[in-house]
Amino acid sequence: MLVAAELTLHGVPAMKMPDNWPHYDIVAQPSGGGPAQRISVKARTFKHGSDTFVTYQATDQFDWLAIVLLPGADQMERRFFIVPRAVADARATKAGATAKVANDRYWTQDQVVKMLGDFKDNFCLSLTGTTVTAP
Image 1 (spheres, rainbow, N blue to C red):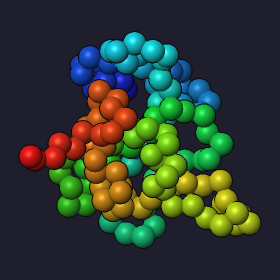
Image 2 (cartoon, helix red, strand yellow):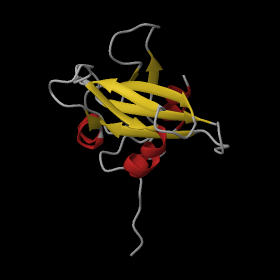
Image 3 (tube, rainbow, N blue to C red):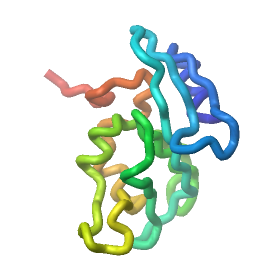
Image 4 (cartoon, helix red, strand yellow):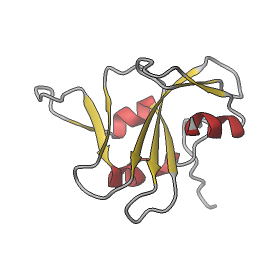
């Protein structure tokens, strides 16, 4: 509900799907028009370490991945990363094709900020992210 509310407050009407809806959690309508967008949300209480993963499946059906890192460890604020599916797929760690978890796509929580930082607070659903480069 946090992600749906933030999107709506930023001019992108969004609605949470019923609990246990397959593959995605939110449907949003971009302000510029076009088809409705399916958003899968992954929320974690932040902690450091190599065993603190944010994971999704290659077979999941969604257009955007929203990662919410809730306050924890030394992080005092809630952080949102809203990433187009193609970018998530390209930047995620993948196991080998013959591995038991070959369909898993993942980052450690520490890696989310480094690998997806350009999509922090991307509530307008920009395909290029929110990072502005100084002239």
